[in-house]
Image (cartoon, rainbow, N blue to C red; front, side):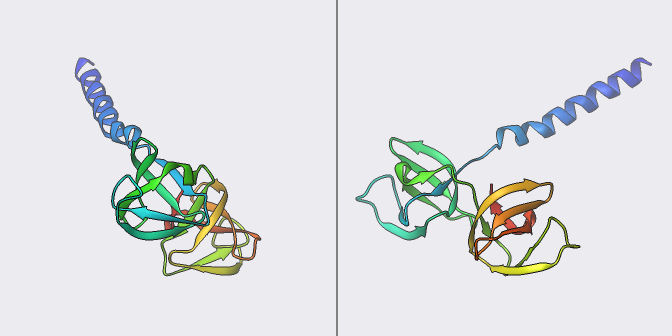
Length: 151
């Protein structure tokens, strides 16, 4: 019996160690609040503008420096944005070349539209492996979470 208890203890330790990165890897996400925001090479308006992001674009926060956020997008690109130009509104960006938007959370529901790679859609809620979004025409639609990046 002692051997079994020792094995169970080791198994619990392995599970705890494997789960630890999941807990510490919790990511802070923000989205662009302004119509257009400059993504910069560094934290300040005197640094190079790498590209511009449009409203709703979700970003993962890597660090904060004063009133600036170092962020990463869904493609892994990094840069800096002014924190005041971001907010907590939940959005997803499409990672699939073409994404079927469905009337319900599952492949048994009919396709009611499509979205393309890089499209940004407001997030309404999540149900398991499916995300309800506000579609391009404003209607609620569903998409498989593994084809999206964001909240």
